[in-house]
Picture: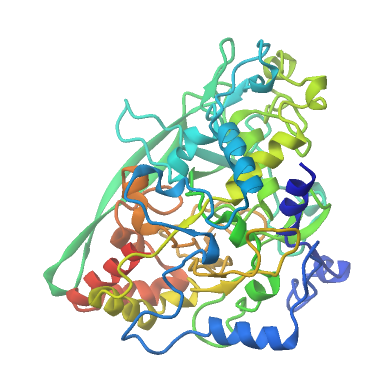
Length: 518
């Protein structure tokens, strides 16, 4: 596992900063002092930077496919298979040993955890409060989760985050300037677990109601949106805090995570423009979070508000919050239970000396993380189709690419890391953007306010129905089609959204066809 651990670390972007810059709100750009300190990274030469700038420059010829755009994940691109397992393929450039690690990690990703004590110590430790029994239960086929459709449909791939306003920044450990002070609900913590072991009450049941909104489109067409309202029903441990803020989350697709992690922070930050100095109406902000793994601030990349800086912490936090499994990064064996939930705290848990006192040890955590990092990105389809080419031009002309940045070249990584030096096409800037009141959850997270969301990657989005059996999009699955997802855009994306509403219907159709080819 030595090679595996080294390769896992080499893709992580570490950041250092001037403490003054993060302590003073008056600093013009609190992230200006961030710089990469990658482990096992070969620095780019000036000549290499020039080559990368040339290959990632936005093409101007929309009459034919651009060089290499069919290979969304670079050398990690896999064949676009028209089956439900299309997102579950190992990256195409893994070595033989890496593919073995991938398969072991896949087995652990699918593992059904059981209540302790159990005869198999490697699988016990579930709960006592949880949202799912395995990673795969939420990320079914490594694709998107879905909203519950009716009382018989499970909400296992969706949950509610919860927090309250913090009275002061003094209550935030290692406060970062620009962070919105929040704290866990004193009884329910930071997310509501709707499942529990026998003898323990679930925390709550997520209740969703929808209001229908009709949107007129050009050409006499219309679209119907559904506006959700969320409530925590059947509370198991008393009322929520009176200032509790709830925010829904649907499990996202898993492909290309290691490639996103390997994008240089400098490249992401180069697109940040919090004060909209160029006047284009787009003011992307970097999320900066405290890293448990490296004990310092880092650029946030993962999660709908970019709340995690790397895949190790993304994986470990999901084990803790979603399944109730402890690890070296989240050592509490009771998961997310609070001091008010005494029965949960005092229950039998699954920590074991053979696993270094945790319910999943470092080796297991590394394997699941490696699997999550190494899922291949399916190749683009129909890149030379005339309607797809027309839709690509509409995408750029409408300003969609101002946030959904098409391409990057990843860091040149050492130790055989398969994400090294790849030209990739994820269609995201990984920055936070104000998406308007319609999508606002009014719940801050880190430096993201209640209207801001990280730009979602678009690669693979056209295969959602093939993999997940539905076409639900956005952070809470409210959009039942790509058009509905566009129509929910507001704030910085309002002009692009209005352009889609008012364009000729054939152009709108071409735009959707283009997105379906990604």
